[in-house]
Structures are given as C-alpha cells and as structure tokens.
Length: 180
Image (cartoon, rainbow, N blue to C red; front, top):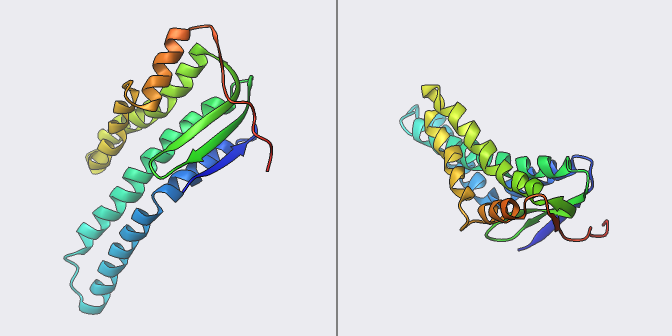
C-alpha cells in the first residue's frame, strides 16, 4: 500500500496531507464509528446509556486525538513547504507505516529545519492549548506526544538536525515529479 500525490504551489499539498492522514487511519475511524453507532443503537433500543460515555470517548480519541493531531502535524509541514519560493512542488507519500511530505526544489538548511520542526511544533503547541481547559485535557496528550518526533531517531528529528548542521547551505531535494 503506497500512494503519492504531488501538488504544485496551490495549497493542494495541505489538503493532500490531510486526506493522506485520514486514509491512513481509516480502519480506526471505521471501528470507532461502529462502536459509537452500536452504543447509540443499544441506547435507543434498550434505554440503557451506560456504554455511551465510553463509546464517545473512544470516538473522540480516534477522531480528535489521533487523527486531528496527525492532520495538524502533516499539514503544518506542507503549509511551510508551500511557502518556500524555491520549492516547486510538494509530494505527499503514504506507505503502510508512515506519511511523508516531500519537497521538490531547493532549500537552505535553515528552511529545511523549519519545515521539519513545523509539524511536531504545531501539534505540540495545540496540545499546550488543549491542556489549559480541563474538558480537553485528555486530548492534549495526543498532541503533546508529537514533541518526541523532534528527536533524531525520527524522520522529522533527522531532517531538523541535518538542516541545522547545513545552516545557510543549500539542500537539493527531489526533482519535481511530472504532473499526473
């Protein structure tokens, strides 16, 4: 299972990133929807609503926590890359284990570091904001956990480190893929 979508500088990369995340977690979204649907059906038929809070929590965790945090993470990468003048296109690649937002063109090391850090930092900042009100505090951990992706054992952390070490030097990225 591998797919790629290349977007020119029209904002399509952000949309492609969001759709790639949704496609990646589709089985979990379906399962959470089925659990919530079953709980709602049981409540409507029997009048017993004891399962509704748990089913709603599972649904919220999958939709707003898991999916929402990764949509924000990947869309932040794509949004930063689309604003760089020497990046001619952005490809969103999806495999079984990961989603990658790949620029085509040239960037300085600092630009590469900024693009690499944008995803984890956007999600972490959202997590800080979600942690403030008590009602959304449980969801905040899905977002705050993205800070770990800044470590060099992950792709974002490696790109961040490489960019910082390159500094103002130029990083050549992939040549632009032909339009489909």
